[in-house]
Image (cartoon, rainbow, N blue to C red; front, side):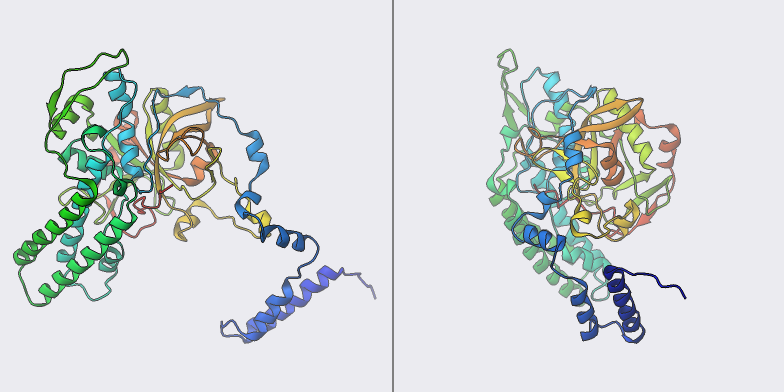
Length: 472
């Protein structure tokens, strides 16, 4: 007979394995006393566990989890950079998508008029975005008025009737309808940069209005009567917005000084005229290419009821492998064109040093657990989401492959390295979901997919997060 010497740790593991096996055979899924005793006995605060316990109870776990190897290897050298100037600050608001959309146009204006700096009025478009979203929400209530109580689609909109978030298509819809203006024409206010309380008031008011519309529907009021009530409700929403943002000017006078200190003559503009003269970008030349591994590639998708303006198309995009997005971004940047992208700002971003790299925070090693998930798994379990819009303005290519990317954020100059961030290529793979690029850089094969009938996805699909979590 052979005897094998078994270590104390192995005996402990065997004991708990046997205990859990016996418990699993008898238990109906409740967290009962037997399981609690087993769990209590599985952790002993001694040795290295005690050292971790002592450290974690008095220190920031995030700082303790920083992967020092990544930080030590970090550098911010790039061999292709798009000319830009200045860093914007969305403050305590979720307007990243709006900043990203306009930030790809700022360099054009600065160069065209030989300026030191220039900023668009975010308050102008944010004001109309709020009003349009309120109208869209109330119109959705009218359209879904015959749904059963707690219908999933109605419930989705009731939970979040209005927010700061949005997509590139939202930017397009707003500019096409309302134009743009310089910041001086409608400057920032406290509420425009700190939207939480204003949003709470708007949400309460819209839910009150929704309840009234549903009550009218129960009373068999006509759609015309419901929409007449909606128009009256929008007057209250408009007043709330004016009190927070100010009245949007229909016309404004603007003059500027260029880098040579030459001052222009004052000139009157409407917002639409200002966009046409000062920007003039054909927004139809931009397309959305996304990477959603939970859905088949090579198809066009449309997000049902995901829009800010009634009458505008729902958000749509073509789904492609991540390498396609990467190649499009490289082509654009090398040609001097910035690229809007949507990524997950809650994962692996060091806000002090401006580093974006997968595994930057190694919580798995710190706590002794496996936290590994693939991109599709992260999306399906809501661990991964496109919750922030930024702009790619540089790429470092070595041996014909991108190694890292230069990112212009909208969190001001105090975060990152003077407002700029270094995104490593692995972060691009793991946490980047969409790019907005010009059609000129997209292959005919991919462009043809936009002509196909889109596959409809519900508004609660993982790809749709509306970027309202991008507050710094």
